[in-house]
Length: 384
Image (cartoon, rainbow, N blue to C red; front, top):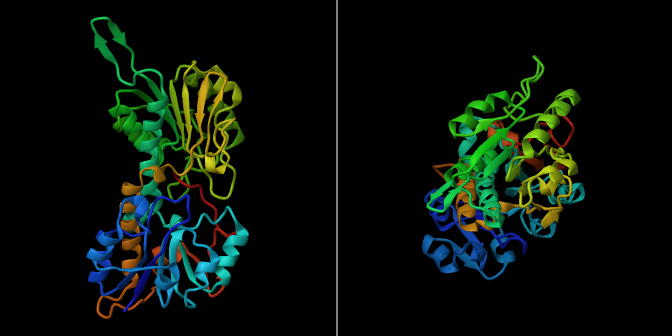
């Protein structure tokens, strides 16, 4: 029988790695599920709900971890907790592996077999396991809702006896998962939406959601995307032409959402201070790349600031502000990934390291960091 453990996350994390629905699914596979008391509180899941689903609620994290084969987590667990697991135990979480090399080495040194869910390959079979998509989708939605809440004008056009209220203009920079949801949400709120991306292939996606695609022509040999479908860094000439286009377009926009991230590097600067100052009084910018330094000059991670008459929102991990939905989706992602490691006949842990979703997310094993992106063999841009 495979023992699965979930313990309380760090204080700033509102999500939880398992829900009662997923507990039932693991129980159906013959697993024993242990959850530290209070682990689901911030996602509005009570200990009683976990118990009703078949989980054992433990008084301490140590009791949940003892003898566990698998630890499920949202954020990278602390090494001291991992040290309480048996050698080779599986840990699946969002590790943010580029941000703290020492912490990552400490994780590897514990001897656990660590899987970084943000490294999930972009293949059809892995869509149900893709935590970046599930969490970024919510972040794109929340970015528009937050911007609308701070905006001092109405979002949709309104025809009244006293006159017409014009619709807000929303510009989305980066048409990944978060960008597409931002476009869809802004359109639902009645805004006039435009968007840009280095990948010409996203034009059809933008237009299918009712947005206008804004893009400069790339060089003939530049597709704007990697073989895996990710956006990639473009040439300096392209950046100059794109910046000129954005500088002109942004002057008339009410709300701008930026989403560009490149793993292991500072976020690319898309909006300069001069561009910000050219915007209308009362304009709002939501910088979804704030955690990596921001796409916007002046962004302060975790803060909402004013740069002249423009508000720049640098809130990070927006999915955390929708913990019920975020936990539900994340838990399902983890189940889809982990269930393939559990033998359906015996309920024992059996890992196929030849499987693309396993090899693609394997971060550390046998005391060593093994993922090629961290050993210098591979680097791809991240979709947000």
